[in-house]
Length: 217
Ligand code: DX5
Ligand code: ZN
Image (tube, rainbow, N blue to C red; front, side, top):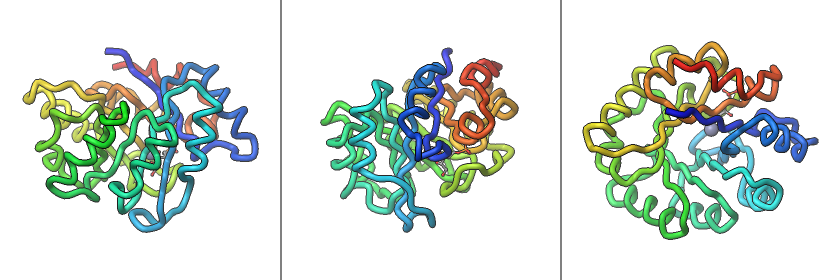
């Protein structure tokens, strides 16, 4: 199975964002990971719709928009209109029918639908919609900040998601986000992850895309 890298621009130099995005393109990134935080679902505030709109014009990389926001059903249409190619909301913010409504919103505009779970959220919350999802994002740090350390054992959740998908005969992308670098990538890939998000490892240590993605199991 091929592994894909989604560099997180949260760790990039915003003053030189255009060049940092081009560096991701040159380095062989598959997606560009955009961390949207609203100061409610997570304590931090980061970027929003206007930036996604600008990025859409500036790069041909598909935009992998990670929504750490309290009210995704209100704001998802805005991000879709701005050009998000993948919209990932948090499972903790959607209940019952809302999960299906969110996925339908993404699909109706031709985007991929993803759901993310925080480290303490059981994978079972994904079960009712696992057949409909294009992507599952397993957080391997508490969402809110880049530069945190990988929570050991997160690979077990990746394996549990992969097993659930197999049981249902579905095949979503399995993405991992938080503390991913040349040392931690191997275990999540082995557990079944195929999209790796990396912020600090790419933008702060000059680690190359290849060094992360070839940490193959
Ligand atoms: C954290 C974000 C991550 C973050 C990853 O809440 O969702 O995408 O940017 O950064 P690193 O790779 O530095 O842990
Ligand atoms: Zn993220």
